Length: 161
Image (tube, rainbow, N blue to C red; front, side, top):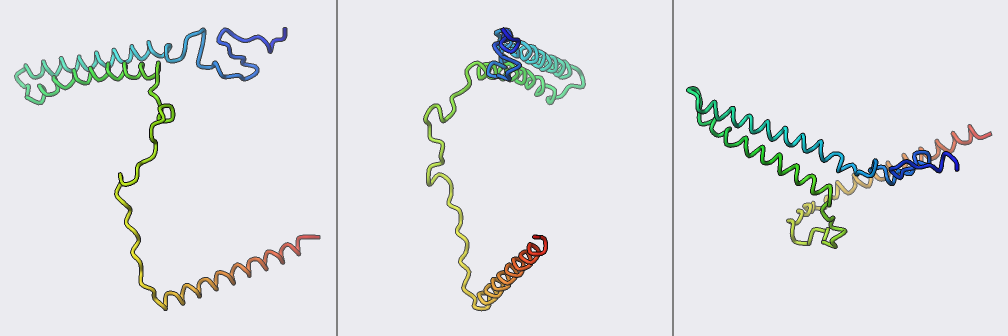
């Protein structure tokens, strides 16, 4: 048995470069490993928000407190709740991601008539002077292209042995 045929416990052959199982280490998926770190982060964030709510409440109860402090004291627990909600939603999406429109067969195009129509460009009246000028510019462009082609052909003749 050669050294190349040995694969680690994760099922990935590092020498062959097969990365199909690179999300797994020791049988534990990456989302599950991150789950505990995110749980700590969400807990610390929620705890911080609740600590700020308690601080604002104590400021409101003091002699220098105002209704702004009361508003913040009510607002911070909502932020703590959002931290927990976001953590749970993130973990749920990592375990079973939501179905994409291609999987559900849902419509992915915008139906006609949903958006307002783009305005059509205004039709400009035909101006004979403008038409003559555009024809002159077209003629100049054709002459310039022909002159460039002649110049390139002469350069090719000079460089070709």
